[in-house]
Length: 108
Length: 240
Image (cartoon, rainbow over the protein chains, first blue to last red):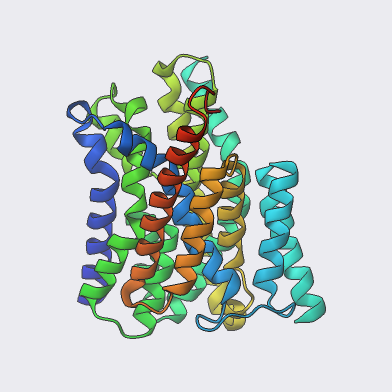
């Protein structure tokens, strides 16, 4: 490994572990206000939506692609519908990926 | 329930997540090597960092020749959501010694958080042994993530065009599978819609700042929406 790679991996490892461990480490001394607890319940939905939707709507990284040729959009909508209808994780992931590849196969 | 049963149950309940993690891990291994990272560095990142979306973003930044400082700052922003995951799980791990808390924190991912948090909330068995469930979920994700990175590296060397197959869609499908069942009431839906709209509108901002801005505004929108709903019907109990 080059020195850049060592710095990259050690840096990323330390930052990521610090984020994940800090609250666990001081656990017995932290109490959250009701507002913070309320806000925390919305974090996973907000962060994951913010990761997913831009990839679905602009898979190339720039410019909206609202067409049936955008298989990220078609596969994503299929996954959302499966999840909303059956609330089953395995069906959502497997079904979404299947739709994505079938659509790519036919319209790619 | 015994410790080993909790452990196995944690692994079993994580299986649906593995369906998404397998292709995602493979495509990470492929992309990282084609981005210019060495095989050892690609594997070491899965072993020591263990954060799929951050590894993915870092590999793409390496490919575009970004400086180390900017990559590390981006890692901080992309992974900041784990601070909030650990806050949500804190009430359930507070009683554990540090030798448990440190490794469980190291292995805390989106996938294990979704599975484990649900178990802590919904399962009636006493909390004392549930950290074995947590551990089972984490080890299932960790071992698979490393194995898939290795497969990705090997496949990438055999099939150089693998990066164009769209395997990264697996991450999208996994995250959709986590989010959609959480959209049970109007404030949650408002939070998701606001975060999505801001993320798309602010996509051009440097260093993934759009992601953090979207998350922040999405959370604010959810809280405001919940407060308005509670004010509208003070006598009625909010469905939890």
